[in-house]
Length: 374
Image 1 (cartoon, rainbow, N blue to C red):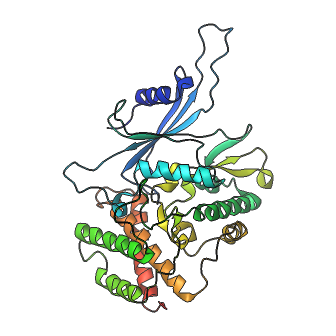
Image 2: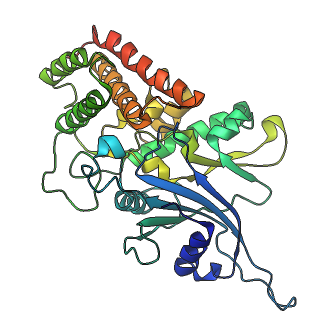
Image 3: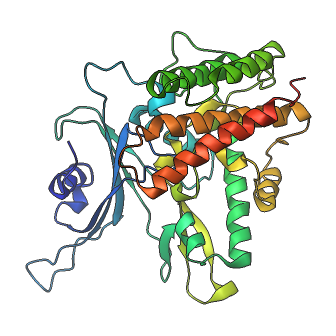
């Protein structure tokens, strides 16, 4: 069931007692199904509050440490459906909460300063994760990086500064490492994989099987993909990844909040203020090259500059690594197609994202025909 504003206020008052008498001024469901980071497994609400006016006008209102929150609810599939799998549903809230804790402990990436996971089902029937979102600096406005770009708020200088920050934070994220590869879970799995090739091939094969079963074999040339994947496996294409790094994979500019200061044109101060939990919806322990922000024709030079200056390793040194990057684009496109579901009644934006995904698969197949695996 969806979250109501009344329930949101109850959850905030329970976990953040200082908000008990606050007033919700904005309550928005974030349902961007066209975003790469979207997952049907999680529904997120943005909540803004302000102190209530005390009965005694001479009494000051209760101060609030935070006035903005993201509340994410877990949505499980039909009870009769198979259990959630990463390639169809992404990560669960427990995995995202664990990753947020690791990031806060090991980097300066500006994820929310705390995260509260409740799996008790006592206040509402679902599991939920609450993250406070820090206010922007005084005199600044807050918006997504994607919105700032669309509205022309970045400018040349601001755009480069933000790109350098993105590169720096990616390098810090990739330095957070694990003992095994694959979808993150808070406890070590009994079937842990110590080979990125084994993990990635299982994910991409699972995505192909799911998509072929739902949309039919005529949707894409699955047999051609399997032939090229077999060749990549034979040459151990993906086994050059030695350490499992934290990789956001599907996060994009919608998952990053920036503060936009006063002034006009190049005088506007733009800075990343929060990387949202949604950036981790599809995070995985794997190859840093998997990041969607590294997808051709990117990354932009300033991202690479920030990545390198912060200690990020070179991404593509040998031609075979370009071949790997084609496979990572194929995987992203397959997940997008699986997530979009049926075509009936879809919006123009959804149709455009579907066409993009189909085109990416066909483009990568043409590249894979002659791309080296050795």
